[in-house]
Amino acid sequence: MSDEEAIDFEQIEAETEIASPEIFAGNLLEWAVERQASDLFISDEAQSVSIGIRRLGRVEHVRKLTRDYGRRIQGHVRVLAGGDPGEMLRPTEGRGITVTPNGRAIDLRLSSMPTLHGQDVSIRLFDPVSGVRSLNELGYDATELEMIRELLRQPSGLILIAGPVASGKSSTLYAMVDELNDGSRKIHTLEDPIEHSIPGVIQSQINERANLGFAELLSTVLRHSPDVIMIGEIRDARTAATAIRAGASGQLVLATIHARSAAEAIDSMLHYGVNPNAISQA
Image (cartoon, rainbow, N blue to C red; front, side):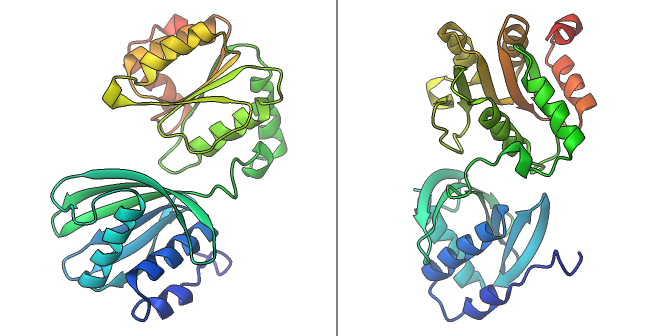
C-alpha cells in the first residue's frame, strides 16, 4: 500500500482502553464511514477480538482488542441494529440507524454467526449523507461513461452488472438509476435491503418470510407499467427468466448477478436455465 493509501489508525489506538465500549463503537463506525469503508468486521479469535474494515474491495486490519472489551462492543452494535446483545449460539440479523458522537447518522445492516472462538459480526455500512453517487463519481473514464450512457439510452433490454464482492456493483446500479431518474420514466426497484431512498423512484423491499422474493415481486411489478426496473440481484432461475422476458418485451431492466466478470455473467444466466436465444434478444 502506498503512503497516499495508508490509513491513520491513531484515533482508534488512543481511545481503545479509556473509552467505554459504547463511545468506542460510535467513534469506530464514524471513522469507518469517513474512510468510505463498505463493511466493518468484529471477529472473535483465540485470545482476542479482531477489528477490520473492507475499503475499496480490500480487507484491512484495524487492531486487536481484549476478549471482554471486544465482546462488549459486539453486544453494543447488535443493540444498535435491533438485535439481542447476548445471542451467541445462533446466527442473527438486524438493521438500524445510529448517531455517532459527532452527530452523524449511519445506517447499519448487521449479520452475526457463531464461529470456533465465539462470533463473527459483520456490519454493512450505509452513509445517508453521501447518498447515491453519480456515474461521474465512480471512477470510469470518458470512454467507459459514454458506453454506459449509450446502454442506458436504450428503451429496453437487460443490463447485468457483475464483479467480485465489494467491487461496486450496488453503487453502479444506484448511479444508473440516478442517471435515468429525470421524471420522464416510471422506475421501480426491487431491493434486499433498500440501501438508499431515491425521490421519484418507487422502491420495494424483498420479504422472504412473507414469500415475497425477487421473482414474486418482479412478476407483480410488470403489471404496473414500469419503464425501468432495477433488481437488486438475480439469484434464481425464475427471477432470471422473468428479467429476460421483461427486457425483451419493452422494459429496461438493470440487475446485479453473482459473477466475477461479464463472461461469467452469461454463464450464470445459462446456469439458471435461460435460453441462449432469449439472452441474445434481451
